[in-house]
Image 1: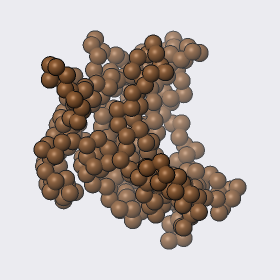
Image 2: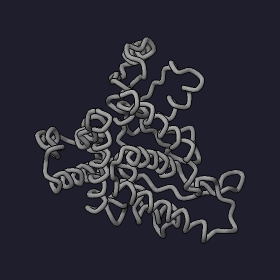
Image 3: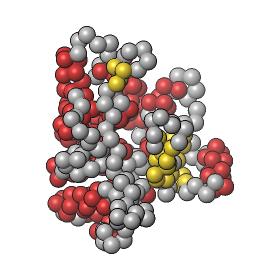
Image 4: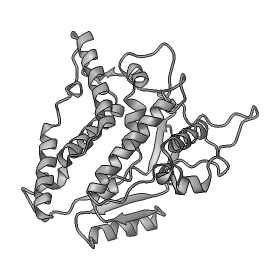
Length: 308
């Protein structure tokens, strides 16, 4: 929406293409040797959408993906493609809770990890419940755009990080969207317990599998200019979630869980500013940065509401 509306003042017929996400999850193994990286997971499938139907460019990209043996599905619109990104649904609950925000903005006495269960990480049944609530709110927004819904559990298991077939019943995965709330939460919790380790890795001589969930939280840090910055996660997630909240407002859709995530994050930013007035803080700590992008979203929705 933002790119399409921004570019419309230069060329109303410009083609905008969006992809769902990145292809691989690659990490630096040793900070002392940043040229040594480990790809811990590769997406089974990517989605691509264009503002132009029968896009020649999409056909070319699809042909290239086929040559590279990358499964790429072309969907009806850029918005449709962008909704097939699991981080939209899981990063806000994982990063915008009290446990995680404390680790990011204040630090901890011992390392804590993004994808581990409490107390090693933030994952509790409360976090899972909030994940489900946010997902439900986003499905209402997608329905307003006539974009197909996302089966969250199926998307996690089949297109992101798989689990062993013994862990989750195929019927539960397939029918996840229509199951009772408490069962949905139980299944999501089981999924996260299943990827504490890489269930497909080879155990060592002590029976230990690869510690897949050992992704430490990154804390606020000073860059080379001595400016304090917030890590990409959750700063990028805050931006995306704020845009989703604004879309909901423009459509008249209530998003209480999304609102709560943003309120927590903004409170952490403000608390850090209050406690570190002597530090040079990046613009990330200002929570009203996105008014220009929100205005573009508003204009886009107004124009398309008129046309529809």
